[in-house]
Length: 429
Image (cartoon, rainbow, N blue to C red; front, side, top):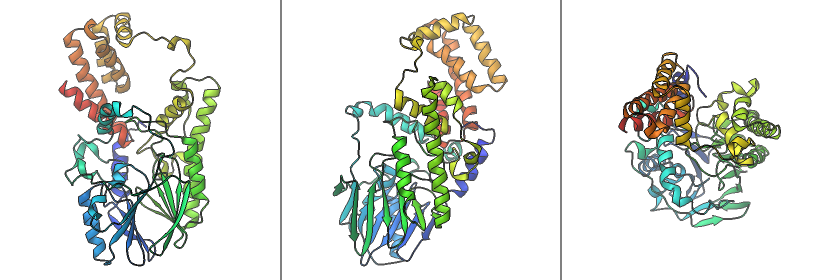
């Protein structure tokens, strides 16, 4: 979402959303917030510690391990992963000397065959989304937590693979005196689970809830995240009488009434976006028309835990649209579109040539119409040899400037990173 106060809002969010704390929830359960990009939940068994996720780097997990050793001499013997994202597993290596079992769930849907062939571009887009090449000042916040350790020289990912991999929908186990109900809960990932600790009345929800608008779609790219299944998973999480909700990122939510309110609004806001998008599709609206029409109702729009600091509603709408009907929007003009270079060449010609388009770019920049300026630059850059080298060089420079201005207006940390990363790439072309 673009907003004139985006940078201020992102700084305030960064300063308050994940302070470094080791928070005691009950006599058995603590949560480490702000020790890494993701949280680590520590459950004290009769003779050992059970970790739910392990932070994002070896060094950070080692610091947490040392802190825990000052509280108890019980070693970490069990690790449970809420899902496979590397920022939740990257600290596992710090516990290799004591851990005896590592538990995870298999994904409900396999990764598409051949995905490994596109990993180079997915990795490039991941680098842009998370702002790995940006300075701290440029970045402001990585969105869901402090910057990942590998991005700032605070060690690296150190993975330990799971030895116990469940394919069931749910498993109940007692581990060192503590009962866990582990439930498959498709949402942000297809291997996502939540953990219910009945003796503590604690719900560990992984990444299906965190305190801002979620990545219903990640701009780095990936398979469709089943939003209907995500809504259903939230319904299941809400059905437990939790006194504490411990997410995979950001601060816990405490108190049964508060949890019911927050999760209820979170679920209903996501359901609203899904339902409204499907309604627009059923009316024959295009993807662009649908993305412009679907906005959160006022009752959700100002809630602090639904702000667009990570994902955005518009990106979610576009993902749902393509997830249900694919790329074709129903307009036959789009069945066999003119090739991009030819399309750009003809539009530049129609506009009066490269000089006319260049003047339009400069006018748009002067009038702070940065999105329009970037799109006009794309015409010049896309027209290939039909425009001069000088026009192409100017377009790269103008587009980089437009992207930096758009970054300044973007409330989503991911969107901000992508704008700035691409601007830096244009500077070096």
